[in-house]
Length: 295
Image 1 (spheres, rainbow, N blue to C red):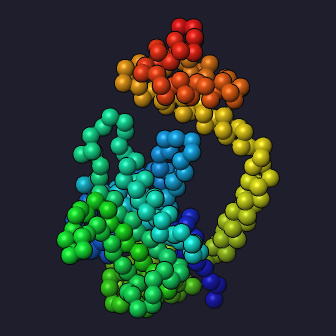
Image 2: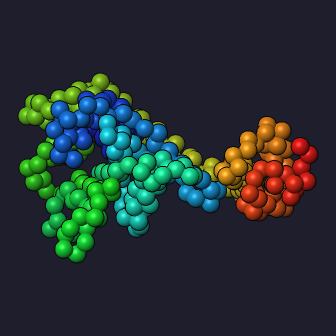
Image 3: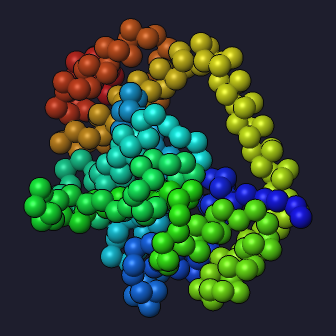
């Protein structure tokens, strides 16, 4: 019997590319009747990066419900020392990602993080599915705008609707997946998608190639880091300058001529000076006057 794994992040993305599967998963995890979920669209998994020194957030799967609620679903196979801090960092980024400079806080939407962990994070006595919100010491809820679901795939099942999803992610063969669908008709769509993906025939070499590509990328990154850091710093400063100018209250357009002049500058010290001037200036016009740019 050939084995396969559903725990690679690219497999999770492929599985949730199908809306009926997304709906059923969210229904079971968030305890929302499927009938109340009219649609669940996929969103851009890349979180906005405003400044060069900020980390770029990349989430496995981001879904958006009808009411604007954003849901991040992430599969984490390997234990990480600072996993909790990392998870909250991405939740915070997702929460603020849609709010542009000058916009009202009313635009902020509820954000839910669902983490599927293939390692034990909490003591074994805790259930496999733990839910966290912001509450005071007496248990009174401050808000439901942040909600964290942590599902540990290696713990004993408890008889909830999430059990069969854990069985599916832990399945080692198509036969195991098929048995889940036989016993639970709500899982048939997800199991059928797994079958259509042809995991039995292809997962082994895809999975091997996936990790080979990761190892090769790590090796390349180590090799080019010294050379690439200078290019990255220059590009980062240029983008920071342009973003600062575009955010000025005067709302003057950054002309193509000015943008091209900034992008073409090679001198590191000049770019540093321009960055400071862009931060100090109250308008694009004032920036051009400070740096004596031709109009």
